[in-house]
Amino acid sequence: MAKKDSYVEAEILSNERVGDDVYKLVLSGNFEGQPGQFYMLKNWDLHPLLSRPFSICDITADTITFLYLVVGTGTKLLKDLHKGDKISLLGPLGNGFEFGDYKKVAIVSGGIGIAPMLYLAKKLNCQVDLYAGFRDYDYFIKEMSPYVDNIYLSSDTGMVGHKGNVLEIYNDDKYDQVYACGPNPMLNALKNVSDQEKLQLSLESHMACGIGACLGCTVNTTEGMKRVCVDGPVFTSSEVFFDA
Image 1 (spheres, one colour):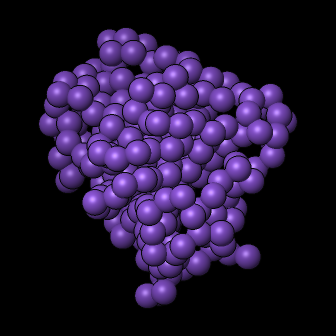
Image 2 (tube, helix red, strand yellow; image 1 turned 90 degrees about the vertical axis):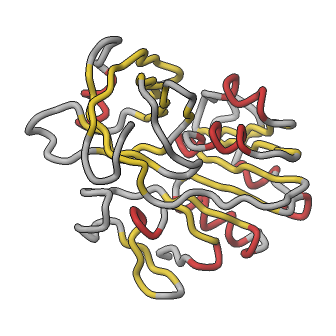
């Protein structure tokens, strides 16, 4: 079991490509965590210097899953790992999504923002609609489909679903709670068309330590600057301000 104050080592069960530069990493072990929380992962010695944060995608009795997009040196190293290789991880870190007695919920994701949504959807006990926006092709929808009632897709190019922004097919009035994760411009646009108090945002941010020490992931809120790693990554929409 991983601990919040020290890294532990886990064995890789699979590291599967599920989309363009998108991989699903499954580790063996008994891990804890709530939807929205994250782990810091590392499998290198000196370069890059820092670990990388990844949302919990799913947890079972003997596995933990992460979904990641290859964007830099760390994730390029991760994608070349194979079954049986070892990886170090620290967590669970941050807060998680809050749950309530909801009747109809929307999950809104942009790109790799779909990563924390499988574990969330599995925990919800009500009608759940998924709105997922992509640049070109979709990914991870097959894994999500057993746990949601309706799926609405969009893509910038029109290769899947609605051509355009996913918010163009989203109706906030239909839902009594909304969970969202994705790039800040999408979250800011969603914030502008939603009831602020029913919208929970999981923020994506660069993190150096993941434990609140480096202040590298601060975000402007109604209570001043807060750290995404320890005060988030989940915030109520009304709390946060995005840069113009």
